[in-house]
Image 1 (spheres, rainbow, N blue to C red):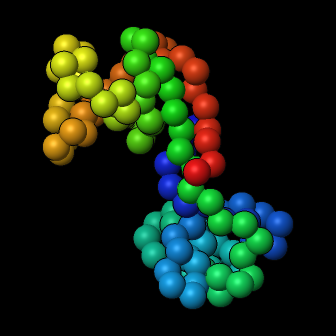
Image 2: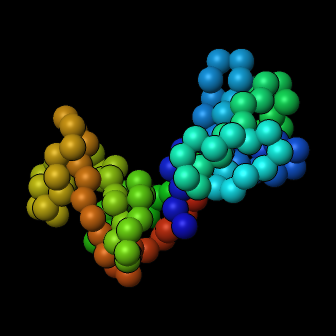
Length: 121
């Protein structure tokens, strides 16, 4: 599993999270004490930031075709990746899409990706 987003530890458990000023939104895929369903399979609870034991941004990095990437998503054996090498000729040669100015993304077969690592930023 690849992650790209905030995580928070609250009451000894880690959750997907979203900081919001003095509060942190905690997310989980199943119902729980005081978690409200926001859509099927997604439940949220808002807690004061002071109650959160740890808050960090987690990013999954990898290497594909010898180049550095972050992993944004995964789907049926493919990874949505974003090039972090900063060289547009390399991104163009790899056939990556220009997502924004200087931002290049594409789909990589998961079995071709190496050095998959999770980093806390």
